[in-house]
Length: 542
Image (cartoon, rainbow, N blue to C red; front, side):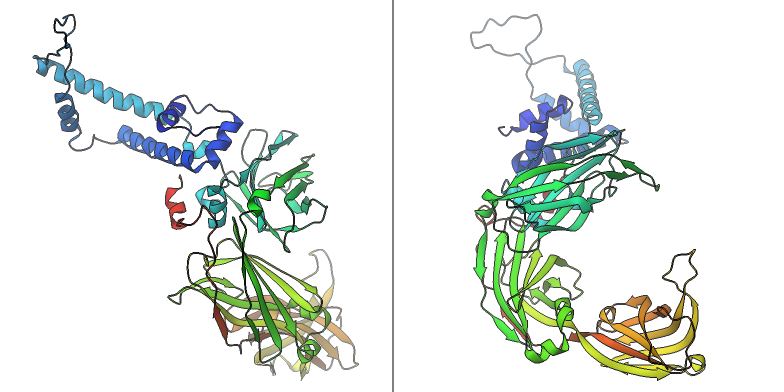
């Protein structure tokens, strides 16, 4: 449909906002009409303030009367004999002045009441683009006109799932989902989306849910793609048979399955690829090869690959290699960090990170909703990496003496204090179960990634029992672990006379790196050359 002019928008508001699905969709997706609605919303606010103000604004009466002074009125019942239709000024102004003021005041009240009675603009434009659920990549996609309406509406047992907003390109698929109960009340986070699948046209599953946000009435599901996407069409299929009842353990069983296709042909035509050629080898044998940046309408994807030297592979064999994580960030020309990955940066963050091992290389894809290398000069800075390695750090102890004589475990820069050893109820068992386990009280300070460690306890007879940490870890450059109760030694039912605590795998952190490089300046997507992301937030309706 064609965009409206301001007069048509006002007429629409005065009519009571009665519209059909096509009209509401256009209003949500069209930036120009969205701006008109924002202006109308501001007008609604002004009239409401006037209506409920304790007094009229200072000078209001004088301003109204000054405007009326310039009005010329044709006297009632008097015919003009001039061929030019000469108008005569009203002579008896004072009696009429009070009446006009009353009329003006009544007009203010009447218009305010009319607007106040209409549904709130922010209420009926229910969208995943509301201020609390929007991001820059999504707003860019909307500016380019890439929002699709799959017309999904399934209803069962009085409950409805509705989808009329989808953004899809080679970076991700994001959809706004409205779930309502029989009374029409929105339900948030009450649907299990494990049955949601995103596939290419050949039936290969390519996406996973990597984030969920919500406003008061719309859920926004963010599905990122695990690998590079080579398709012009996506198939979205969901199997939903349960909806939870808020504030209870009850569920409603039914059928809310849906399926639709998302065309990304137009979005793919806008993709811009920037090749990268830099590489770096760390002192401990990890090589990073940068590959490319891909700018799509809704975000940016960074591609790179890592390989381990033969020595590093021996330290991290098999499954351990797959648990590696890279830490890096991006800086602007002022040296300010604008985005970080696995480094604790609290600003813009990566949406998803995926990797796959192929031909001896681990290929990485990092997805950002916003990385302005097409608008600013940015630098990639490598902060380090972690990878579990086989280890054999150990300490011997006498369990019955540990309370009075604590033992300290030291290994690879980590320090653990063991201060008690008993056998009692297994805290990992269910409440009504009577399983028991060995319990080791402990506190620790770690420079390595403690959560990736693997521990065992070996008794005096050589039997080994897996030990699992249970407690809290305070993150930081130094991680502080506090047991609650500490190490839980599974399967141990009798306190041993002697024991050895062994760490078989250490989540090794390698900060001994020094590498950075300037990103090449990328080309902006046509239509977004002069876009200032900050303007998105200031232009949003409440």
